[in-house]
Amino acid sequence: MEMNDAVTQLSALGNASRLAIFRLLVQAGPDGLSAGLIAERLQLAPATLSFHLANLSRASLLRSRQESRYIHYAVDFMAVDALVAYLVEDCCQGADCLPATAAAREKICIDRAVSTDPAKCAIRSK
Picture 1 (cartoon, rainbow, N blue to C red):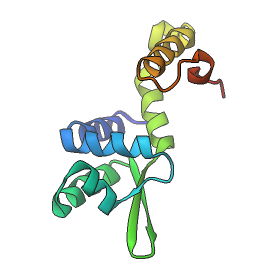
Picture 2: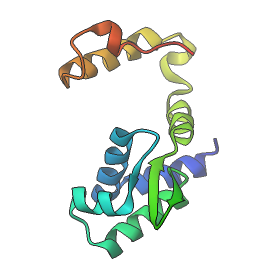
Picture 3: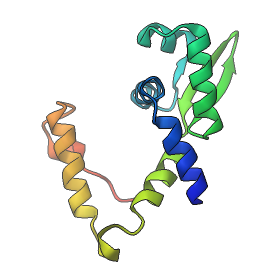
Picture 4: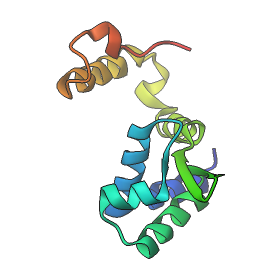
């Protein structure tokens, strides 16, 4: 990933409404949500939502698909993985820091009551 791509993506997330949309779509998973459902859940006017969805799409953070007369939006998880990888590629001065990041992720998972079982919250190696 190039620095300019990361800047574009981070800038797109640097707005409260766009960040709320992104987080909602992360929760929705790979199937995403229709634009109407996003607008309803976040109480955004259609024109406002359209503006923010276009911005996130231009930054390659979202993908869309037409389903009947509805447009569904979903997070492009591969793009997000690439952004996170770019942000932490030099983490810990090249030392293996996965255990530290995995432990932090497990704590967040348990704190949010996703699961009380650390095994269900653990990061699985690829």
